[in-house]
Picture 1 (cartoon, rainbow, N blue to C red):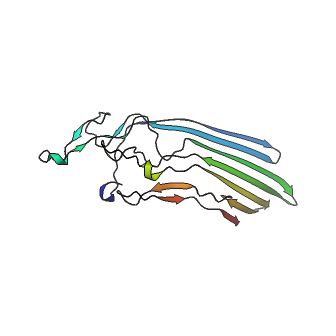
Picture 2 (cartoon, rainbow, N blue to C red):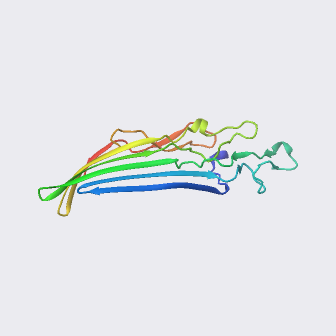
Picture 3 (cartoon, rainbow, N blue to C red):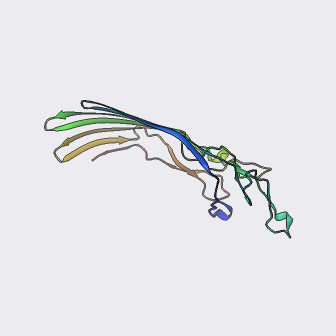
Length: 203
């Protein structure tokens, strides 16, 4: 959000995303084990400028709002440096699932547990919104999207065309962050959207 809380959209420069993903499964009888993980290294390839009149990544130009009114001049500066991490996407994510199913009467029962981990991440692409003389990193008031570990459990029974399952998601009631934001362009009071709290149900 920019001046008067209007959304400002500016083209950035190219980014590079390197990473690796893996998914491993093991099945033996009624037991199924699965583990998945992803490492993502997403970074800018060049600096992003506050005001860019040309392709100069050094952000050293002087932008003149009105040549007849020099005090209104705005000095260009680096908002996001070269090789800076992109926001929202954590560097590391992983999950593990264990499921066991066995015959009971005329159907099959099953139990399942899932544990998932998500690392922390920046909220904002920008690293300096204060200007060339009074730098201010939004992370100083946003903080970061916090790392979190969630556990889900399931207990169910299937027979014919029917299935009944007792489930618990976010078993330990972890208050994880989904999004952090401010309500206006000049605000520093941070608001965040939490993930779903512990939920127990039967379906």
